[in-house]
Length: 465
Image (tube, rainbow, N blue to C red; front, side, top):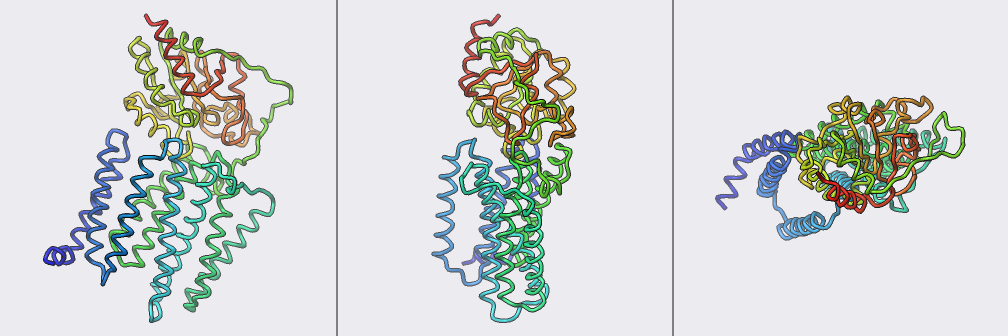
């Protein structure tokens, strides 16, 4: 009992320590070299927050709280051990949905179980927190379905979409204002339902090429939803943690939009579409490309001086990161200068390629961002593209009719030789054909990324100096 009283009496101090640890967590997560330390600091901060809040609760139902915590921990541990890296983007989106759902549940519980009327400030907190949480919930569920290629997460398109979105948003805000001014429960329920529908309709038209930005923005929304929960519960730690997540997610979304040379509004309400697009200079005539074998690729890389590897979602899909690390190490031993070029929106979520390469223990010093390495392609002997499409598409610089025109890309076309590992000549996630594949300097290598790279490793071993 004494320990409980000590924690309760010094809750603000514990929350302050937790808040500082959360700030240090973000600082640690800003670099792959310190990411593990950042994660550990975050775990410590969350432990402090949970324990402190537990002892501050007014008449808690212990069996219900502890049971939920144990169940949640078991599910979390199970998912952490079983989720493949290829499923990480949709898993992140699904976790965002839970934060939004929690915000809605707490708002509804507060509205239902308070006997007296809410103050003006409390109604504003409930209004904002609930509709942000509801939008986050349904939008994240759709993002999960789209990233996981679920049949129910169908993209919607047509001239009717934007008017419907506008009507839903206006109606949602209108009923929210009605609740704010009259404390009407009916208005609150309708606002919540409209927010759930709007979240779904808001994300449904967005093309696959924009999903990394969407995931980043939903991360921001989940943070603001958590901050809203904090205001509702009067919990300073939740307000601070939610604000940190919300602001950092918003900044990341802005950075990614800059990397695509597009505004956030264009991504969210314009999009680059989902149907296969045809370049403006495409006359419909058959296109020819050169294909080669893994042995050919291994020979070229083993005899090169400089090699740049450009990973994309194909590397994740084939779970090829460890094979790529083995090839990287082998080439290094042969005296080849090997580096990795990372586009900010490569993969299905922010930092997707960095996570994969870190998992395979690729040295951080050889993993370079687009701005750091783009000028080096002109002096590179061989570029190996592994399952990337849109982030190396020359149409972004050459074709004004292309939906991605103006988007900064990895300028692999400047290298002496380009090799591309793909399963087929199908388009990328944005549905766009890629003129890189038809260039004279490009060699296509068809097959599963992991198997191809493993064959390349055997070839390099056979041609080693």
